[in-house]
Image 1 (cartoon, rainbow, N blue to C red):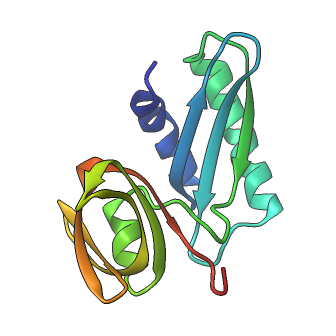
Image 2: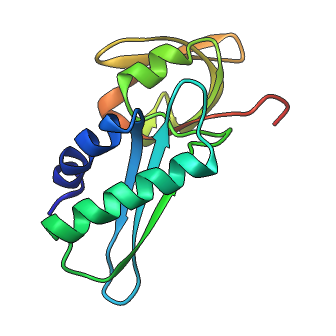
Length: 150
């Protein structure tokens, strides 16, 4: 099962609990695989939320059995340097500082650190040292918030 298929399986259960599935990391390599789920809600995530989501996801995975390999399940909050993965995330954090890594260079560089100015279905605009860079969402490798003072 692909990561995308797994996300579609898990999302309804996580949403019923009142959380948003913000990220899913799947690393299956035989002996010690990892299934890392990141959840969020407007008022933030605490340990009880992670436990509740972990129990529900574990039960679903036991029933559906979509992953053949052995793995450890981790459920966590996005943290201060949260990963932005959906258009809604970019729109919510406009005006904040981001670190962006592109798959291929744009304007001769792959890494950008600056203020997220705007976002739409195709691009985000990041201002770096007074210069705006339009970065295609389809070419993003990673985008993370930079905590204040970091």
